[in-house]
Length: 210
Image 1 (cartoon, rainbow, N blue to C red):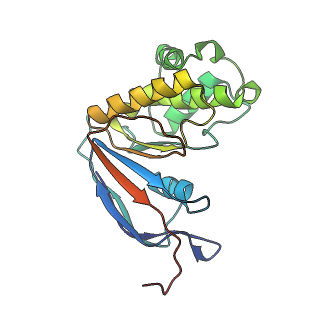
Image 2: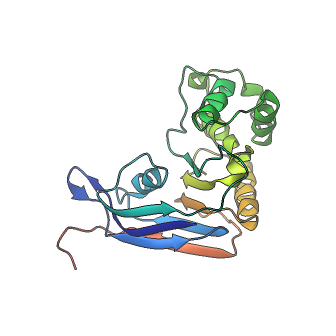
Image 3: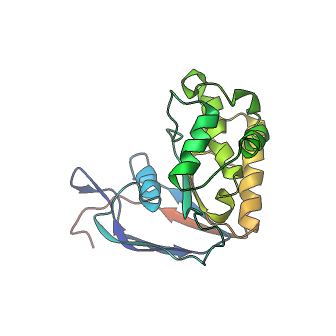
């Protein structure tokens, strides 16, 4: 379960959006909307612990997991969290290792295969197209550790062809059905099946506003 209480995030001394409070449990799809520059990406980074908040609190309330090193969340943003000098295989091992998780070559290959990029496993990330990079990054959602984490997805359908968009939407829908919490931003009208949807609209705000 995720709980935000009067969260304010600033950039350059300016609050990006009005104080934000909401809670969402497993199985909920949280759609974050707002104009460009409203702070959607920054909010997801804050949820992932990559950006600090000016005020308010963010709490991840979770059940005790049998997986000792299971991550609280997995964040996939515009940069895809990859370094150009590493191969797809090395990127996987690095990202999992940061969270203390060991991943086998077989698991990496299986996940890449599901996103149609298994042949790229030993290609340097810097040599991949934007669409290929996106699919390699999103393949992490098929990892065993991702099954026990909340998914924070920033424009996940950008640079994907129609067939891959459908595949990803189905995978997100299946995760929600299993009780995962998914927070995403998207300018594209992609059909995701969710029993519960929470719409969050980020609105501009200045200190002193009511």
